Length: 259
Image 1 (spheres, rainbow, N blue to C red):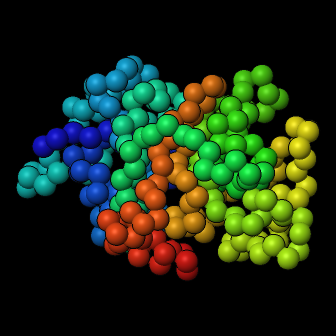
Image 2 (cartoon, one colour; image 1 turned 60 degrees about the horizontal axis):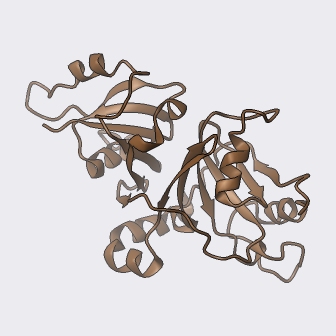
Image 3 (cartoon, one colour; image 1 turned 135 degrees about the horizontal axis):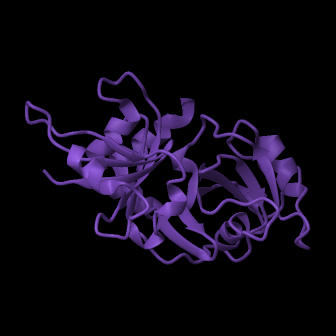
């Protein structure tokens, strides 16, 4: 059986598995007996990369099929300080799995701004900390700011997604601009309106912990991973491609409204 190495973000862990990505996503999201249910975000890691920071050899010795021939679902390699120790170059693909266990595969690509007129962004951090953040910083600048070792408070690496906020991306101070579909819509509007253009207050925390409304269908552009000057980007396909080629995932993602 083929061995896979996955970096899970919810929660953060490095996991060996004999399951292919779609099956592994289903296992993370629903459990082996569907006793749990929740979204999963993970990336496949190149087993040939420099991973000397982990006891990977010992873990691989444990990655053997069960006596009945069924694949070993998981062997945990590490559950602490994982993201910062995995080289960005080793991240091959990213995956978003809905609570129903349907997975969307994302290939890496170069990031470029979709809209040069946007002034505001809403980020959901996915590890190693989990706040939702309003910001004037574009993804690359936000990534650099959060992981800047010279900052008073920083993390060595970060993973996050950007979320759709409609007209609030341009004019949050105007009451006639529609709010967001999130449960804290007005609070998000207030946070965005409090930001300034002079760099004194480019970000503001909207919520300090990962909320249960991690809605994949509201992801604006994709998943970002990086730290200290580097960033890797895994974009979502365009809306037409998602609807035509990934209809089951899209239907399942939209069903997350009540999650």
